[in-house]
Every structure is written in structure tokens, then in C-alpha cells.
Length: 209
Image (cartoon, rainbow, N blue to C red; front, top):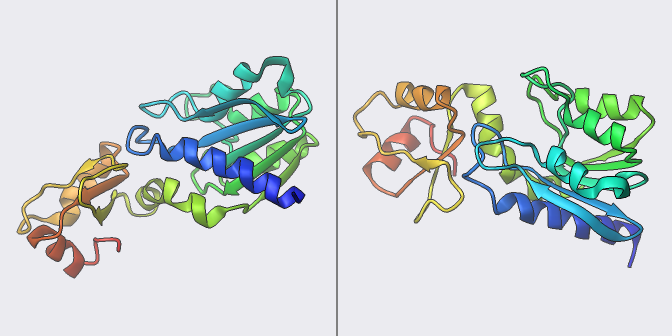
């Protein structure tokens, strides 16, 4: 098995962890983190329900001394600063002695936006980005949409699995205002069934296919 295949296998594991938490972590995205040393997983975690703690700040303590010299696979760029002023995920990784970090997707939010990867590289860690980024993109699509528009993303779904909640407004309502209100409340990814509301959202360019 090639080194790239090994990396893809561990990143797929991180993506699976995060996928299992989708719909539970808003206003933060679901992130998966897998810590590997000498070819074996020594710790893994996903963002906790409610968005805290982050995946990395759970996995690093769980790895203990095995974090030193390890490779970390994470689905979204580790934060370089925290809104609360607490220790960032980049700090957790550098202080633990991690030597390599493989990131699927970069995070444009104010508390990452390259600051996480820059902080890691400044401390001498090897940082690689973009592995399985297309597969991981769905994990943070609603979070990024809310950052860009102030509104949660809306998709059509049969049962709402993996969504933050259902968008159930009247098709005749001011849909942009309704969505901005929900965005302010922290929702990132909502669902609706096919029907009059979905048609109204589609007509206004508010439905993501």
C-alpha cells in the first residue's frame, strides 16, 4: 500500500467520524480528527454536540504521550485563535509534539483563515492540505455558507438526516429574512421537502441543489 493510500485511509476515517456528528454541532461544523503513530490510531474524536469541545482538543489529551511524534488527520483546518481567548487547536497540536498535520479543507472563518496552518508551520510541523477535500466539503458547506451570506444553507431531503433542523416557513413569507433570523440563531444547514416551499426557495436562488 502506498503512502498516499495510507493517508487516504486515515482521512476517510476522520471524515466518517465527522459525518456521524452532522446536524449536532451547529453553530460549528462537524470536524473529525484521527491521531496516528507508527501506523496505528492512538486517538480519534469528532466535534462534540453543540460545537464544543473541538475534535482536536478531545483527541490530543486522549492520545496522551503518544501524540508526540504523531501524524494528525483532520477534516478542517485547526483554529489558530479562539473567540473565547482560550488555547487554540493549533496550540494543542504543537504543544503535544505532533510532527505532521494532514488537512482536508481550509477554513476561511476569522479564527482560522490560514492562521491555523501558519501557526503550525511556524512551529516546525509539516502541514499538508487538500487531501480528500471534495469528500470533506459537505461537512462544512453549511458553516461556510452562513459565513458568506448570514443564512443557513437549505437543501431538499426526505428525512433531514444530518441537518441542523427543518426549514418550515410559509412559501409566501419573506424567506431571506426568515433564513437570516435562523442564521443569527446559529443554524448552518437546514432541510425541506419537495413542494411549494422548495419551489419558492428555488425561484429565489435560496435552495442548494
